[in-house]
Image (cartoon, rainbow, N blue to C red):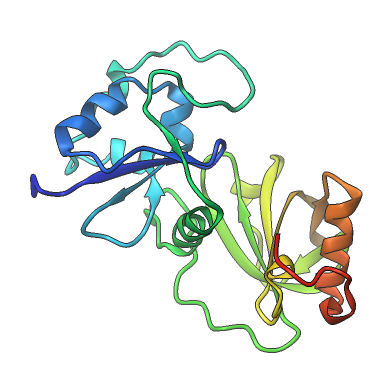
Length: 229
């Protein structure tokens, strides 16, 4: 292991990250983490460009952090997402947040434990892509088939890991010229019917639903929103 490698940890729930840490500093940081931090944080190395689930690093015998999870605080009360007060975290700006989330969305993550997205063809006109993430950090990507504001079929079979659980969903309109309509983050769930699988969209507000409608209909040029938010 190269001791010059720097490590950084990112919390997608609070949109915060640590500074770049030497290996010994990273080990001390992990020891201050809660189980929920281990399960939800992502990490990056200074010699790599992607972000990957921290729990993958914790279970790899080749990493300098294997076994540390057993030494972390095992008491984990249910509470709203917030920064762990024991950790030195700093907020990230929107551009940094987008870059981090783009790299861990498109990274090839531990094939034995996750379903990752990698080397997908660039969508053609009028194609909507869907990226699903479950609570375990597993990722699945497919193209939408006949999407509506209520939901969509997928061009691939959705694996069982994504059934019967709340999902984070990113609806991607790669043809959008306005970033406001390019990537829309909503919630979702897989509904299985006699006709197959269906991904139901769940919007937290009418404004978000309106954004989704315009993106799915490729009518951004007629929108009153001219700048990304």
